[in-house]
Length: 170
Image (cartoon, rainbow, N blue to C red; front, top):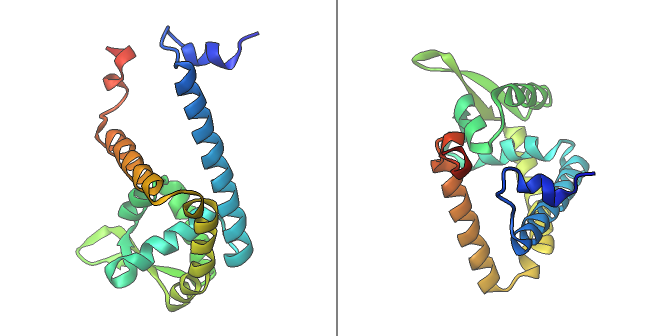
């Protein structure tokens, strides 16, 4: 029987015990938070968390609209998943698709008045949930450190060119 440590060891590149503990804790925390956020947005907004994130993203940008490809990239979902989500959100009247002037191949996703109202109505409860489960449990210094750490990880992930850059692929 193969245990988790053997699987992570792969080709002789096992995580150290403290790295494994940190990684497992990170996965557990993010899975639990994702579950709580998904249950919250399902209950309060009638949609999965990823759909709510799309509406929030649109609410943040000038004109409350973005090219569909840019929206997918910003929220980190596939174009096909975005297309499915947009159809559902459009059916609820929370956003519309618009043609992109000058580029017939592109579409905009645009937040409707109803979508803006939904985000405004559900935003305070969503923020309260994040405060309860994330920010209130951390000191100001821990929050600052979390911000630095997530920025470093995100930057490394964005600048990696692919699997060929991984040390065991060299």
